[in-house]
Image (cartoon, rainbow over all chains, first blue to last red; front, side):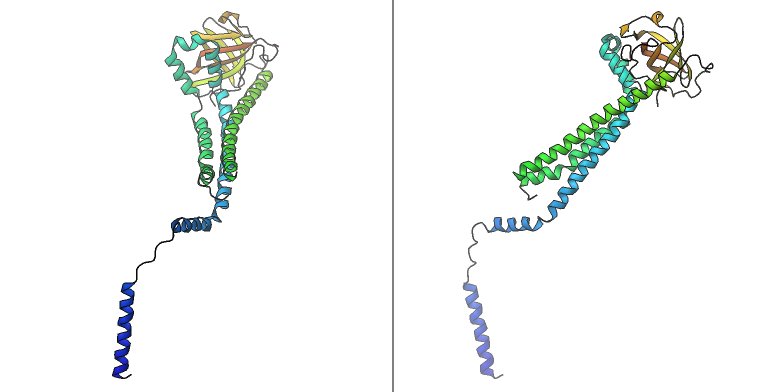
Length: 143
Length: 153
């Protein structure tokens, strides 16, 4: 390459640089961010049905657990005498009012706390498991 | 529309769990009551003499079911499927026979009883409540509603 050709190339680069510095950033089209976000959400959509099915199955499993633990709690309520103590307390109020603290302590001792807690936790698990369903509805996610 | 359907499904699953818990508890209690009633029917005072409870439930609040083997001044001797249990009646003890509030002396040998109370280390049950049913009474009339073959399981 001759000296003249080299100088010509350098001049053209400088010209391009000068032109670029004059350029201004184009204005952002209105609603661009919203459109990008909408497309991103649509791209995630295929994952949602799977999550929703999982949430549904989790909720149903929790319901089954609630039934099983409730059944055990019911049996223990009878065998421990807690149910009968409650009935007697309701039928004969004086049993309670004669010694309320003693009555409550006895009831607290008789109640099958473990099974009752398991039943309550199962119901709570059903609520937690179905939360994604509620959130999907709230955000308008495609189902 | 879809939002509402999704929310409805979520609410239905939670409602199902609550319903399952309540129904399960009721079924369990009903089943245990039926089991205990059956055990009570099978219990006879004419069988060979029972020794003091062989498989005593652990001390603490409990329920026993059985038949009155003897009425004493301060309590009862109750025959359960596991053996004899001494029941101490306290001033606050509520005793009901055939649905009526009665005194200890109204109980009779052979009555089916459900006793709830606190079992001491010595194996004496300090009764809070006694529900008795005369032998041969229709079910539900005197209703030891939850007679159990053993207590404190």
